[in-house]
Image (cartoon, rainbow, N blue to C red):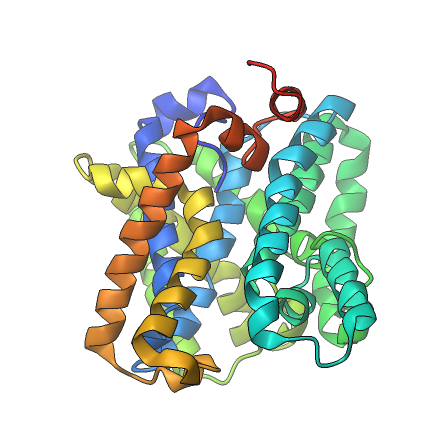
Length: 371
């Protein structure tokens, strides 16, 4: 969900195709995310939801390594904090305002304020859900922490060995860290550190794939993806979603392969597909506005399911495996989310306040200045 204009090195475009291919890739991924969140579809095929959750957001993490190569600096830290954490805080507040009347405050206002503060701080899905009734916002703080780790790797050669050691050590011990301990790590750092090495490996492979070996790499990636996809369906595995790596067990080869190898393989499969889709303007638009779609789609989806199923829609399981309804809700969610995401830039000041590109544009928008 990186901004489409943040492209890193010029050589990437020439080697791997047009920038539009990356928007197409993001478009595919955001549609997979919306489908994975649609219980009326995934309750019919529970394994489909499981497969989706093993690669959709992780591939967005990998895109942040492929497309953004800027080194660490104080200005970079400030700009990325504004870019990712401002929408995170704002949409958390909107979710709280929308869902507090529905969920109420069973444990009192003070407990909820404390829960909301912890959720803002650590960016873990369980804390966020407890505070605002939705989990999706964990992606932004985790992406922020991951991008900062990537920028440190790029800027300071001396910190590469410590980052490698920390990443390997975290993969080895995260399954044994109590969930209560994860909540005190800031801004999705648990997810960021867990996926740092797979993202680094993906960038290394991406930079070495040339037109002469792209077809072979695509075939191998497809084969690995199919094998891992079968393992997800057929084997009881630990939960290795980006938001919750605590279920990962490095001593179970199947979990290791699916949790870390599968997202990398799917990244290259979908990248190959995206390079072959040259005329899918709607898909490209979904990718260009993927961040806005990601943040608004759950509001729209919850509103649609409430309208369809009524007040009895207390939990996702109530929807049940109703495929026809699910497909209609899915299409409506995509169209309405895209329309809203496209409409926001028509109000430049609102767009700069909610989705700032950097500190300067956000400050100017808050002060009511042009630019």
